[in-house]
Amino acid sequence: MPAITVADVTTLARVPEPGPTDLDRRVRSVTTAPVGYEGEGFPVRRAFAGVDLRDLDPFLHMDQMGEVEYAPGEPKGTPWHPHRGFETVTYIIDGTFEHMDSHGGGGTISDGDTQWMTAGSGLLHIERPPEALVASGGLFHGLQLWVNLPRAEKWVEPKYQDLRAAEAALLTSPDGGALIRVIAGELAGHAGPRSTRTPMAMMHATISPGAQLRLPWRRDFNALVYVMSGAGSIGPDAQPIETGQLVVLGPGDVITVNGANHQESRLAGLDVVILGGLPIQEPVAWAGPFVMNTKAEVMAAFEDYQKGKLGVIPATYVPHGSLGGATS
Image (cartoon, rainbow, N blue to C red):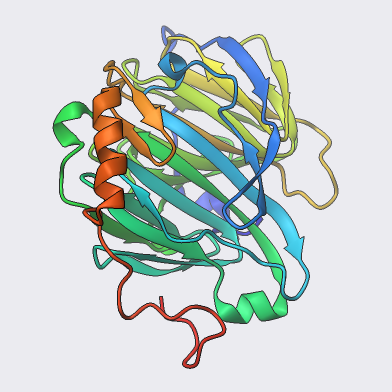
């Protein structure tokens, strides 16, 4: 799991120790993500399955894509499809993905890069492995997160942001036992480079075997911890956690995560994604690729899509296998 690593974490800024009156967030629930398939058939873990939307707010959905070792010809993506009313965040840990949308956004991300797409009023987009990766096969692993937009922001003009792995703020714990990548939001005065319409934070932390990470966390944010790989425990009562589990935490000022003393030999430690955001607390009407406030707005989105009002496939798009190769 490369994402972005540092040879010597002791050179990084350190997250401060929590204060004596800071409250540890306790575990409210632990769920295990079921396995499914997305797009043209790539395997995913449905990280938020079975969790009440009120506990996730402002987040809606998250898939862990892979981790899978593809044989030549096997890598898959998604066909062209629409979105309206929210943002998608695609974070690639291993492998390469191309993105293109009907609003002019697009690019290629790999090994720690992130695509941040604000669907807003609506667009079409496609995500796929590049043609060279389809031919060669290889390791693929990533996350896609859906972030809701409040009513006042659902009709904003679509926007695309591209984040290179090297742009993420990097921090470590007081004892140097954890590497923290700040993808969005702010931690201990260090901000990630993404501009988010909904106040939120997203971190990817690798916690060494036997190490402890205690993160200061905004009291007005919710707190979710998803285990991408490894084993450990969480909260003041050291609730055991393992690969594919999502933890919803209660109120407080501090998130505590511990890496188990013994991990699989292939793992550097416990890898977790830590999410938090300011709850929107508005009605959610959701069907397929559209997330609005009312059923009527969702039906209107389907009608607009059928009428071609959400955009058209760009003329520059070249399907894999066509003369001229892939265009991203």
